[in-house]
Amino acid sequence: MTFRELMERNRSRRKFDESRPVSAEELADLVDLVRFMPSGRNLQPLKYVVTADPAQCAAIFPLLGWAGYLKDWKGPAEGERPTGYVIMLLDRELADSPGCDHGIACQSIMLGAVEKGFGGCIIATINRAKLAEIFDLPDRYEILMVLALGVPAQEVVVEPLPSDGSIKYWTGEDGKHHVPKRGLDELLVGRFPRD
Picture 1: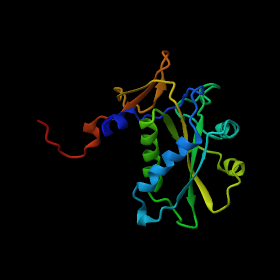
Picture 2: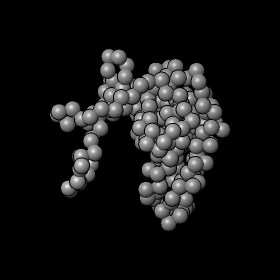
Picture 3: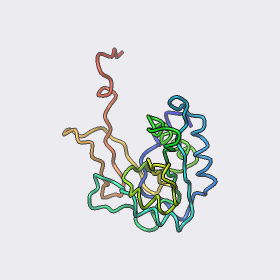
C-alpha cells in the first residue's frame, strides 16, 4: 500500500465490528510507532494508556462525544463500538504543552491502524475527570485525546464540497458516511501553474 493509499483510507471511523476485537498488544504496537516521530525540542512528553479490555472499553465509551454534526446520534450502537482505545496523555513533568506532538502522534497511530486493517476516530470531546478516575491517573498526566479503534464496519465516502460550501458530514439512507472535502485548488493559496 502506498502512502497516498494509506492517507486516502484513513478516515474517521465511528462504527466497528465488535466481533473482531483488537488486542492490547496490537494497540501497544501502534503506540510503538510514535517513538520514531519528530518531537518539539525532542522532549517526547506524550504518554499513553492502551486498553482492549471489554469492561474498560464499556466504561470509556459513554465518556466520549462521537459526532458533533450528527446531533441526534449518540454514538455507535452495541455491536458497533470500538474494541480498543489509546488514551493520549501529556506528562506535565516533561512539558507544559504538547506543542504539535499530539497531532503528529494521532496521525501516526491512525496510519499504522489503517495499515493493520483497523480504523479509528480521534476524539477530543472527553469527560476527562471521569476517565482519569477509571485509570487512577496521577495529576501529572493531562488527557489530550482518545483514539477509538477497531475493525471498521461502515463505508466512508469522500466527496467534493457541495455548491453551498458546507463541510458537514452526514450518514445517508444507505448507511454510508459522507465526508465533504475541499479540493486542491482551494488549499493552494496564490497562483499555481497547471499544464
